[in-house]
Length: 378
Length: 182
Image (cartoon, rainbow over all chains, first blue to last red; front, side, top):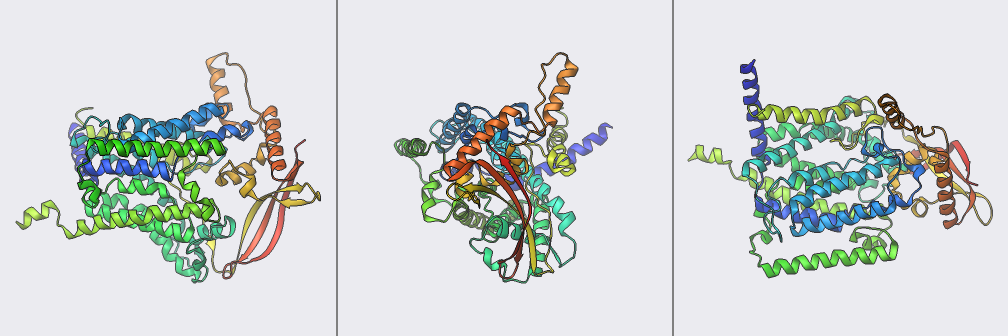
């Protein structure tokens, strides 16, 4: 029996090492990504749950297995407002690098608590990767560089393992989306469409008629059968890409960005919350010139105070005028028809640079032979 | 445990990841939160025909001036609740029905406590006082949007579209339910 367990352990170690090699990232890149996460939340995705305190308790119908089900009712407005304010403070801490490890863990915790109540209206949304990644990345060195109060460094081995676990979680998440589709969409039947089922219900029922959506109507419906197969292969393949090596993993991340860009333009579903998730595996410090600059303490203090000031002024002004907490992007609302359209432009604003950055990483990975091959060549 | 760290980690992940997915696969209603599950949406549609039909649900209120039923614009009426929760809330009759009452009894023994928790988790709990509060809340929202506050109607329609032009061909009212709010 011991021999058997030793054999299993050896095989699993080999697989985990493969996942670590494919998903590892450097401290500087992770620290820059922490700032990007902070900016993303502060500008586009500020969580807000205090509005739940203004709706009647009769609407509280939590899912069967949920944190919400441990409660009898929605929490009162002051509690929910406290969650909102805490989340803003943790976001500022992430952005500036103030005790990031604690801030990240608490952010994820409060975010999931807030979502548990929000999903008690009878529907669960699927943005779970976002808080899970913030939680996981809190155990890496993402709070070490470009930080006002830096975290204690963790060993390289711990960081590699955490990133590998996050990559495996992402692969599993994709599997949960693709498994059911595989059973239904791979039917070799040109008369039944899976992609078009999403499209028609969105276009005709939910007014998702923006960007390239109208062009779907002029293409013969059978053409989109290929989209069904692509979606299944894409969603079931990340684990293979992860174990195949770094360049294939990054190529899969690049395809994931194209997939989301396609969803944003054709289906009008932006899902921007996954952009920072994918970027977590990209060594952005080698592309971004800002990473090469050595920041002085005075410059960091100026950046920190300016960002904190701007975020605080926005929330104070917006809360006092409309009694709600929203992202600063809400000021762009008068420029568009409605919130749906605004979210799409935010989606484009997020996905285009993300695709570009990951594309650069893929090009670099495929142009430079891996260290092992370099050794063999020399 | 130290001897087999990779085995333990893999087992732990399997223990965290697989049961929620199994529950969701069993029934959408059993989907837990939090859990690592991404949206699937594996439905299909017949694309061999030119027409596609969908069920559309809307809210109607009586206009204050002429007392006629009018479709309520959700853009102004529905906030602060996000639009994606419209369908589940309407499915629950706007929480205006007292179908499944909350079961609350003081816990006495462990067995009773477990029973109570199970009842609480399984019941679709709306108490009569909650229904009254919810009625008052919808009333206020109707008045703010310029509608009479005594009634609200949920209407389901079967809408047929032409998939080439994107135009509506027919609208058939399939169900309507009026709720008195006074």
